[in-house]
Image (tube, rainbow, N blue to C red):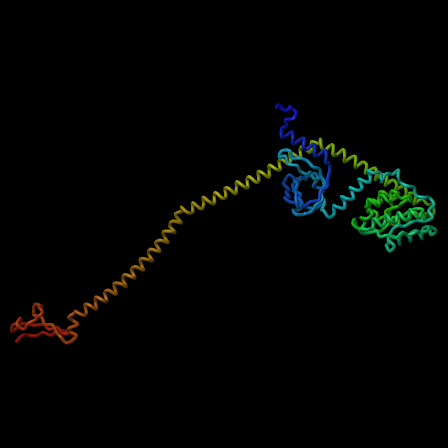
Length: 442
C-alpha cells in the first residue's frame, strides 16, 4: 500500500515537530525535584538531572539564565525550578529548559505566592475599578487583628492622638499559623453581618514570609473582595506585600499608616495624598500584573520562533560532543595505560636483569648444594678413613711391636723368620717399638 507522501517523516522533522508540540502545549511549568549528575562545562551552561523516587528528567540551564541563581547547585539538593519542556533534537530526548532555580524550602512558598497572584489577577480581584471608596466621614473603625499584638496598640495610639472621637471595634483573631486564614475570613463575615463599623482595617506587624502566609490565602482574598465594607490592608512592614494588599481597597504600608489613613488631621491632606498614592500604586501593580501576563505569553510565543533556542541547541550539541570526546579520550588513555602495563609486564618477564637474577639465585642454590655435598663427602671420607685406619692399625707391625715383639732384618732388609737364614758374622738390624738395635751374629 502506498502511503501519502506528506506522512513520511524524517527523524529530524519528527523531532522538530515534537519539540514544537511540547513547547506550545505545556508552556512554563514549576518542578520540585532533587539534583543529580550536575555538570558545568567551560561553555557556562549547566546540565543536570532532576529526579524523584520513581522517575527522572534531563535538564539544561543556559548561562544567560544561570547567572541569576544565587547559590551553587550540588548533587542531592532539593530545588524548585521553572522552565519549559523541549526536545533535544539530535538525540531525540525530551528535556526541561530551566529559566529560574530556587532552593526548594525557600522557593516553594514564593512559587505558590506568584501562582496565586497571577490566578487572582486573571480573575479580576485586583482590578482598580472594583475598589470600594473609603468613607469621608468615618465614625467607627473595625480592626481585625490579634487582641494582644503590637499592631493593635500602634493603631489605638495613632487614633487616640489624631482623632479621639473615632470609635474602634476590635474583631480579635489569630493572625499567624495554619488556622489563621479561616479565622480572619470569619472575622470579616462577622463584621459584614453586624454592619456596626464604617470601614475594616486588616492589620498585623511584620514577619517572615511564613509568618505572613495566612494573608496569602485564596479564601481570604475572596472574603476581602466580597466584603460589603471597605477594607484597608496594613500587614507587616513597608517591604512586605501580601495577596490581601492587592485585593484590599487600599493598602497601607504599616499598621500605624493604616490608622493615619482612616483618621483626620487638621487639614485632612495627608490622608488624601496617601489614599491617592495607595490607589495609584494598586493601579500600577494591577497594570504590571496584566503586562507581565501578556509579556509572558508573548515571550513564550517568541521563544518558539527564537533563533536563540536553535543556538542553545547547537551549544548543547557542542557540550555533548565535548563530553563524548572527553569520555573517548579517557577511555583511550585507560586502554593505552592498560596495554602499556601489559607490555611492561611482558618486558619485565623477558628482561636480562630478571634472568640474571634468576640465574644468580640458581647459582647460589647450586653453590649451597655443592658446599653441602662437599661437607657430606668429607664427613663420609673421614669416617671411612677412620675405619680404614682402625683396620690398618689392627694388622700393623707397630701394633705387634707395642706388645713386646720385635722385627729382625738382615743387611739386605729381609725379615728373618728362621735362625738358619743367618751366618756367623752377619750384621742384623732389630727394630723395636722405639728405636733399632744393630747386632752381629757370633
